[in-house]
Image 1: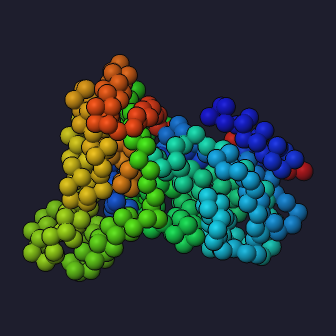
Image 2: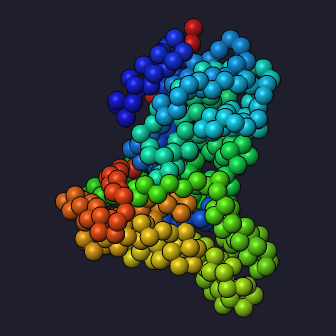
Length: 391
C-alpha cells in the first residue's frame, strides 16, 4: 500500500500533467464464508484485505471525464452528459458506472464538474478477491468527497452494486462493496444482505497464531458470463416455487418440502444457499464463543456445498483445498463467485510457507499452471488517504 501511493501520484502526473487533488484506497476482499447468499437476501461474512486499488482524482472545470489505469494503455474519455452509456469502455465501465450510480442516490450530475482519474491496484484481477469492488469503493469515496455529497458508507456500497449491475452488466449482490467499504482491522463484517445491517465480528487470528492464505488458481472468471447469472436465475426460480420472497426465508427444516417441490438441479442450488446461510451464523457463533480455531469444519462444509450442490468449483480450486488440508490447514474453501479465482486456507502462522509449498507441488503434479499464494490480513475499509485543502 505504501508503494502504491507515490506510484499513483506519479502515474496521475505523468498522464494528466497535473497533481491529483485526492488519493483514496479501496481494498479487495476475502469472503470468509457465505457464498452466493447475498443476492438471496442472506448472510455473509467477508473482510477487507491488505490489497487495494488507489484512486488519484482531480476535478475539472468542464464536464469531461478522463480515465487511466496502469493495467491498460491509453486514456478513456467521456463526459457526464453521456452517462450511463459505457459501451466500449471496457474496464472504465466500473468507475463510469459509479459516477452514474451516485446520481441515482442524490448527486445532481447536471451541475457537477467532470474529473480526471487514475487507478493503480495490487488486487489480482480475476482472482475472486473483488478487484471490481476495490475500484468501485475507491472511486465512490473519492467522488463523494470532492463532490461534497456526504453519503454514508452503506449508500456508497449500494451505488457500487448499482454500477456493477446496471452499467457493467454483472448480476452481483452487495457483499463485495460492503466488505470493501465497511471493513475493520482484524475483523470480519457480518452482513445481512436484506436489511444491509452489519455487525463487526472479531476474528482474533493473530492472537490465535493463525493466518489466512489466499491461493489464486489463476483460472480467470468473469461475473458477467453466464454461469453466475444462471445460478442466480435458478435461485430466484426456487424461491418463487417455494412461495417465499427470497431463499433467505427458508430454513434447513424446509429442505424436505423443497426436495418434493423442485427439480433435482434447482433443489441442489436451493440447498446450498439455505445451508450456507446457516453456516455463516454458526461461524459467527463459533468465533464469538470458541475463537477462529473452531471454524475449520464449517469452511470445509461450505466448499463441499459449492462443489457438489452449486457446482461452481473447478479442479484447480478442489486441488488447492485438498492440498492445503493435507498439509495441515485447519480449514479451506473456495472464495468468491466461483468458476475460477481463489481458495482460502486457515493455517498456523508458522506453517503458512509449508502449506503454500504443498499447494504448489500439488498443482505441478496435476499439470496445472503454478498458483499464486499470498497471506492476507483483515484491514479497515475504503478511505481518503490524502486530500488537498480547499481554499
